[in-house]
Structure formats: structure tokens, C-alpha cells
Length: 218
Image 1: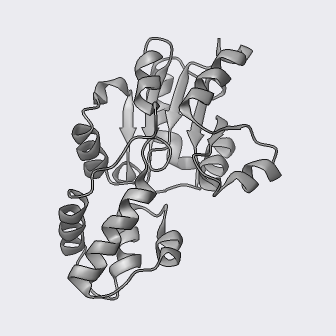
Image 2: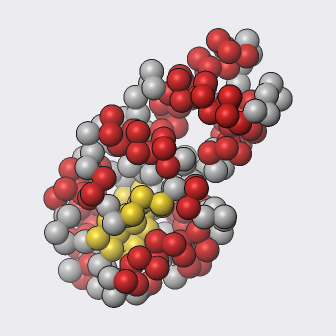
């Protein structure tokens, strides 16, 4: 029986890729007088926050504090957008499952965005961000800190499902021993899920139906 649901954050709960493409385009143009291509962003996507900024802008500055300050300044102008029904789903099932987030994003960015979206962070047992581990997806050990908290709640690995949008989400969670469910808000990683015969949903409405139809979730 599933007792805990963990989520990836970017592009699973919120539309980060779409939002931050716009942010990075403005920042690169106005601050560095250049154009960062979508290919460059895609190659950096999913890296821990500081590595992400250095990969995109390290050729202009290696001062991570400066890069953070300008990135935060620009990102505040482009509010992130939840995927439809994402947080409604969590509210609806808050008494049925423990919820958590495991992300490679920065803790301060995630908490700021959730505050902007007026999301109660107490809905989550833990919001585990890049600062909380020395390893990151696809390394399965990224789940060790949050699993220690789950064990304190008498929850075992086979009672946890991780929901994410990317191959790294699948590889890390399944190797750690969690169940995995893909969520494909677009077609980017659908071929990956299909080629491996992985279960995936297209929306949080589909996720609700999936839970209700799976005996081991009841």
C-alpha cells in the first residue's frame, strides 16, 4: 500500500521550463548582451541550481553570488505557474498520503515561489532541495535524507511513489527502491516512458484517476 507520494518540482508541479526560458532570455539579453539558445538551456536543465547558472553564464562571470542575484532579480518578474490542479490534488489527498518534494532546484527559489503562489508548505513532510544533499538525480542516493524522515513515520521504500517528468526522475527513484510514475505535461519524454513500458499520466486529473484505479494505492 502506498503511504507517501513524493514529487519532483520543476515541470512536474510547476511550469518552470516555460517560465524560465523567458527569464533566461531576458537576463542574457539585458545583462550580458547575448542570446542563450534553447539547446543550451536544455543541456543545463536539471543540474543543481549553481551548476545550472554557471553552465549558462559562467563564460561571462564565475561569481556565483552575482549570478544568483541577477537571476533572482529577473525571476521575480516572471512568476512560476502551477500545472493545472497540481496543488488542488495535494489539498484533496492531504489526509490520505504524506507528501514531499525532492528537487535539484535551490531551496530559497522553491520556497519563494511557493510563497508567491500562496501554497502552504506545511502540506509537505519535507521540501528537499539541492542544498540538502551532496548528490543529485540521477544518483539514487539523493533520496536518502527524505527517506530517513519517512522511516521515522514507519514508511518503507515499497510504500513510496515518486512522480516526475524526466528520465533522471525515473532512474534515481527506481534504483533507490521507490515506485515511479511519470507525468508528461508535454511530449518531451513520452518516448522514454513508452520505450520502457513505464506508467505515466498526462495531468493531475489523470493522476487522481490512476490512484483510484490502483489497488495498491488504497
